[in-house]
Image (cartoon, rainbow, N blue to C red; front, side):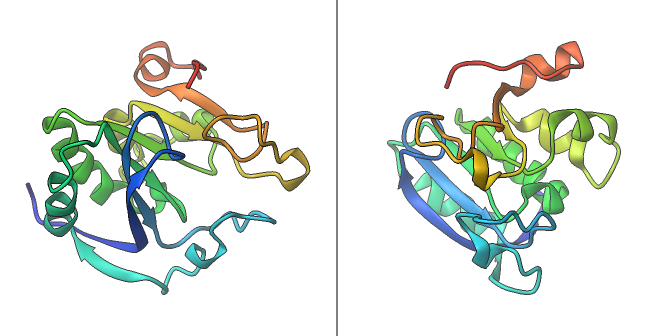
Length: 169
């Protein structure tokens, strides 16, 4: 794996709320959205958190044989898309799936796939949860999502068809 570094707020080793199955969740540091009521406001500051190498993250991921996949959360993962895409390729080669959370809508990401590695990160993402968190639409009934405007997308099918394809979590 090409050596990369990622600024993160932290990780969770055994999450069951950040996508299907047992997941290793990486909370990226830095977010331009600043959604009111955000679950992770400490991740907004682009200078916060700490820098970690991709190899260190892969070591932690490999140490848990029960994982179904890895989740990129935030902050905003697409602010570090190039590095996360490299990490995502390695994760996929290990037989794990990738879930990526983003405050952007799929349509904006798709229209700007050449921007800062956005297309590369989309290419390694199996499931994309898109859209900003909207406190007025907060819902406890939307699996893996914080507000009802957010969509759970089959990213590979969305890329194939060139439009957002929702699926059941």
